[in-house]
Length: 134
View 1 (cartoon, rainbow, N blue to C red):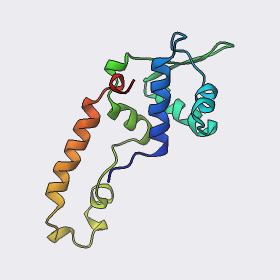
View 2 (view 1 turned 90 degrees about the horizontal axis):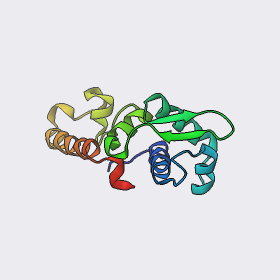
View 3 (view 1 turned 120 degrees about the vertical axis):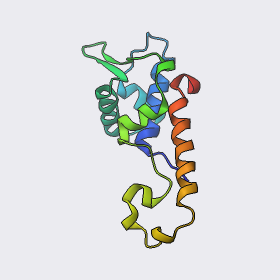
View 4 (view 1 turned 180 degrees about the vertical axis):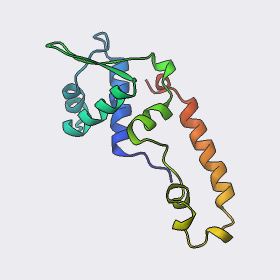
C-alpha cells in the first residue's frame, strides 16, 4: 500500500488551511500547528520546503506568515509530495532500492504489473489539484 509520510500529510493540511483562510490567505505555521495539533518544529521545516519549491510565499514582519504562491487549481498533489519528499512513494522495494534489493527480481512475475500500478498512482497525484481537496 502506498503511504504518504507525516510530513506530506502535514504539508497538504497546511496548504489546504492556507487556501481556505478567510484573511487573505496569510497564516502562520504556529496557527496551523495549533489548529491541527501538528508538531510546530516539523511543520516549520515542511513550510520551508514548500516555500523553496515556490508553492507558498513567506511574508516577514509582525503580520507575516504564509500565503499560497499559486492558485489551488495550479498545484498538483505530486508537486507537494516532490517538494517535501523529493519523489513519489513507491509501491515495491525494488522500485525504491533497485533490483539488487530483491532476491527474486530476475524471475519476478509481478514487477511489470506493479510498474503499471505505480504509473497509475503517479498519474493520480499529477492530475489531482490542491483545489480538489479544498
